[in-house]
Length: 333
Image 1: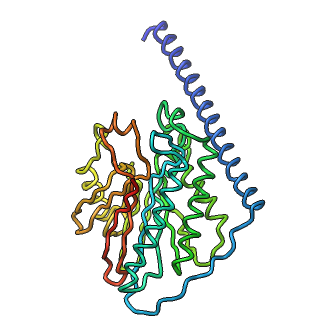
Image 2 (image 1 turned 90 degrees about the vertical axis):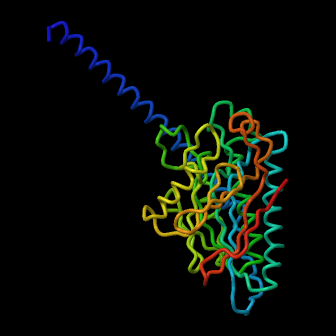
Image 3 (image 1 turned 180 degrees about the vertical axis):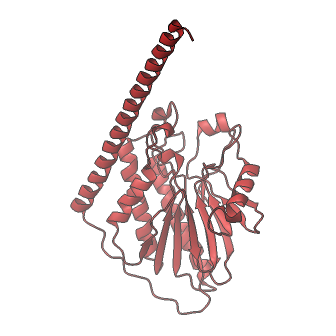
């Protein structure tokens, strides 16, 4: 290598080093900005709880002493609260979610004609808020600020749990985070998520003895009801091709997970695709896909070529037999 080549290479190395340093500063600045935002939200949550007070203890319902009790399993996911379409808004979201609760209670009474249902498991599947930075143009499709979304969603989850506590002896909660809850860009590497934060707001505020909130441990949770074991996952871990629901990818990925990659489970529950469906997997279990409370999404129609009906999912579990005994799709249109 000539002296000129060495000089040119040294200049390139210096340029590369300066570029790396600049990118590292930008990344640190972005993380610090997000960290400040997270801290502000959590501080505001604690202040609001202290001012408003904690909800009073809910009186438990009468115990059903019959044998053969089953467990209700309610999958709440993809509310995307704060999104605004021709038929969806924050107020519509709140009304639909509480309608899910009302229908859950009516369907539970039908089940109770045959056997006790003293416990309900609530699975919060992620994407509970729309956020304002998931994709370009999204800020024009929301009806509230990010702070507004977080606290409205937290209040709505609290209202759901307080209502369920009036009708079930025990309410257990599992949660996973969705892609809409991501803070900043995926490349920013911020480990926290708005779904996690708003769930923590509710968890810190609700001090009910009969409410059991399972501390989240990662991108999935294993939900247990006696001998029944299910995987709760948001679904964005399974990549779609061309925007469509990747049926083969879902079956292949969940089969791989059930083969020993994760803890053992029978069925899997996921959202993300705003579509209701189910698939058989190799371990003999099923994948249950749950819809969204959202409707009227032009993005879904134009880019995903999909128009899912707003819905959520309710199952009943025999904890002794370790299986689903009844399946309901709660339609909301």
